[in-house]
Length: 221
Image (cartoon, rainbow, N blue to C red; front, side, top):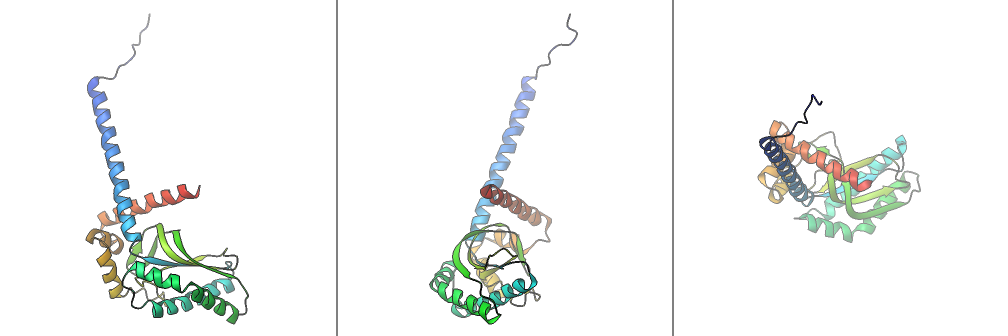
């Protein structure tokens, strides 16, 4: 004789579970849609710079920064009048050999003979803060300079609009650069990258950061 009866889930509970599942699915889909839209708008508004050192040795890291300084100085000259990311990319693309020559000159001046690879492409970037502007991790178009074996730490920045600081300790983003970004982003998107003090904005930024990191990790595996 059985003293325990199989328990059945009532139709009401089943309906509640189904509704909760559908609500969860709705939230997830909307979260992904929101992250993709915001990430796309942010990535399409900037051209970044990525310099990779030969190694993590002190001398190679110092050399990386010297190459960075020369490249930024040159880009500030040739791209001073760029009004859009597309225009900045066109300028950088037409001067790739000049960037490579500049990098090689700096390397030779400092007593090294490392090869240099310079290219423009779409690369994954970690979350980075420039003064009071924070860009979430994700894929961005960038000018990438690989020095030697390119096994050392990276240096990341934004070439357009110019958020890079040769004196990075100053941490001051030019107001004209912010205005350029405002023109390409919605009010909420610009607030997301410029106001991390608000808890709600901070949560949304972290959501974007987390989902983008998941996408980057998945793409690498």
